[in-house]
Image 1 (cartoon, rainbow, N blue to C red):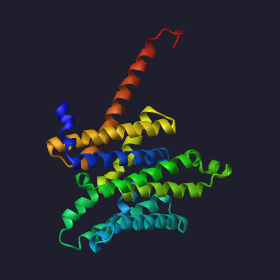
Image 2 (image 1 turned 90 degrees about the vertical axis):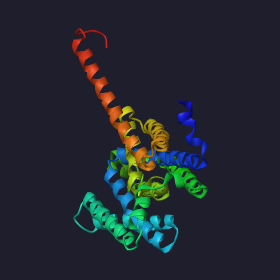
Image 3 (image 1 turned 30 degrees about the vertical axis):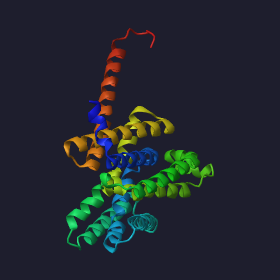
Image 4 (image 1 turned 120 degrees about the vertical axis):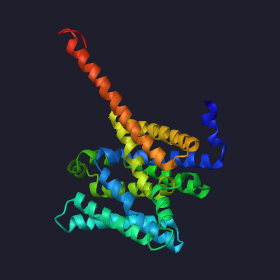
Length: 287
C-alpha cells in the first residue's frame, strides 16, 4: 500500500503535477469560497470558457498563453459589464451571451489549423504532468497575490456576499470589491489552465468550497476545509491516473465532485438519524 502512494512521486513530473495541483487548490479554494457564498458559480463557469479565444490566438501566433488568457478575461469582464449596464438584460443573461460567444470564437479559431482536436483537448483539459518549473513559479506568484488580496479585502468580500446595499452603507465600495473578486476569479483561471485546463478549473472553483459549505459556515473555516478537500482530490487523482492510466485533470476534477456527493450523503444520513433520535426522545428530556 505504501508503495502505491510513494511510487508515482519518485518521478519529477509527478512531483511537479502535485505541487501545481496543490497551489491551484489553495488559490481556487480561497476564491471559490466567495464564488459559492455569493452564488457566482455561473460567472466562474463563463469566465473559465471566456479565456479560450485569447489562449487560442496566442497559441496560434506562438505568443505567451498567459497574456492571451488575461486579455480574453479582461474582454469577458468588460463585455459583461457593458451588456448588463447598457441594456435591460440581467447579469445572468449577459454572462450567458458572453459565455457562448467567447467559447464559440475560441473553438472557431483553434479549428482553423489542422491539429484541432489535440490542441483543443490540451487547452480545455490541461496537461498536469507537463507542468514546468516556470509554470510552478507563475502559480506560486498568483497564489501569493490571491492570499494577500483575500486577507486585505476579507471584510468587503464578506459583507458583499450578504448585501451589496449594506456594503455601500458601510463605505466598503461594493462595486470595486466586486471587480476585485472578478479579477481574482480571472487570476485563478488564467494561471491554472495549464494544470487543469479551462474546462476543469471550474471544478476546483466550486466543488471543494461547495463540499466545505456542507461542513462549515464561517468563511475562514470553509476556506480551510475546501483546501483540505481539494488537496485530497489532487493526491488521490494523481495516484489513480498514474496507476490506472486515466486522464489526470479529469480524474482530479471528478474526484472533487464525488467527494461533494459523498459528504452530502453522509450528512443527510446523520441528519436522518438525529431526527429519529429527537422523535423518540421523551418529552422534556435534556438535549
